[in-house]
Image 1 (cartoon, rainbow, N blue to C red):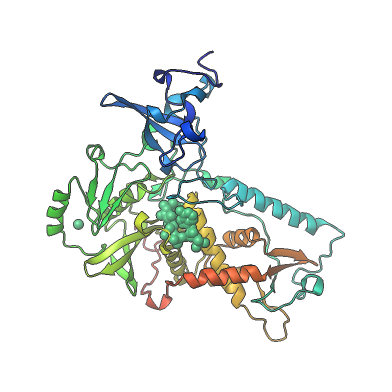
Image 2: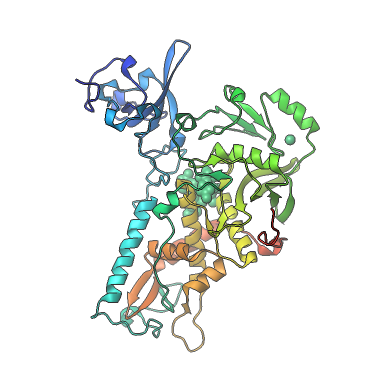
Length: 495
Ligand code: ACO
Ligand code: ZN
């Protein structure tokens, strides 16, 4: 059988090259030798260590944070596929399909259990939205379809649906807001941008595809990094690096960190504390004035952010660091960065909750805060694209909850049978950009077109499930506690 062959052959381990694909036993996965289950993976890199050959593998269709070094005994050599010559660049592992929106991620327990049957990948969301739009457009163009003015009077769906919101409610959207163009999650959003504190990267270097840090210690937590981050090479070989949780400087041993902690004057991030409620605070810092902290924050963030490369010029960004306070100080929980001026209305460049704090609602709190800033600015905003799989999940969940909150609270005005509002009003109240409002309503399948008007129908189940999730979302941003005046960076000339 030729080397180009893609079919199954038996081959010795020495023939495994970078770019090969073969079933691999995942850490914590089932043993294919017993169960016959394994996961197709691509070999990204190979190294010899203490007489052992190690293979860095990427599990196809899984998020890169599951990539790992494995030994020979985890490879199922019976089903190896060699890289085809015509796919070239086999040594860089470029035949792995690149995904920036990895919504289809299947993960082990530590990773998102994306069991939803609704695909959340950018392209599929787009396709679904476009399909819906086309249907709507088609209906609009259908001469048999009644299209009486679009601002039309309140209509009930078939006239038989109860109108009280909270049980089975309808809200008319008027006037008709065009459902095109849809910008969220479009293919253009996968185009690398050269701005952003962590600009999107072209992912063409094998080296940046390989996790280079084994462990970090930050405050009381030991955290296993998910992705590559360009820390100095000499420290990447260490079993653990030790990071000061207040100034984010890194040290190569605990002893060195202890020495640093004796000298380090900080008990909180630099910048101004612009929000404090209970134990949660937000610090705003300028990427130009607090460059070293900002760069160290980006290095740390890159360990958990894929699809972005580190961008050393932090000058054009503000950083909003969220902390939890106790007797020992203000401990970093997460942050987001924001361009001082964004031509694309981005209100977040990068957003991160550190892994020990994830899945506790802090991500939504960061997102809520970012929109609160936009409200103070009197603008709508949207996160920089592409979003990661977890970013997309979090934003979609935030948008859904925020919009439902408004719709459910809506009361009909005097003389109206049903409450009315426009999409622009939703944008104004939430600072969520119009495209994101539209995509959320569309994804929720709330929009119905009836007799020339759009009607939102909220069913009991949706209202009830919303009530339940909101009960759990106890910690919220309270604008009373935000002490902040937006700056007009355009007028300031230089940042
Ligand atoms: N699996 C399944 N769902 C998840 C997961 C997960 N691992 N993590 C978060 N979610 C869902 C939650 O269920 C929740 O939705 P729900 O309330 O409807 O159940 C929603 O996402 C938000 O959960 P939070 O607990 O508020 O968010 P968290 O603190 O975990 O932070 C974040 C979310 C910031 C995306 C975090 O996962 C993270 O830092 N990831 C790594 C960095 C990253 O991907 N950032 C976004 C990049 S995009 C950009 O920067 C613009
Ligand atoms: Zn320090």
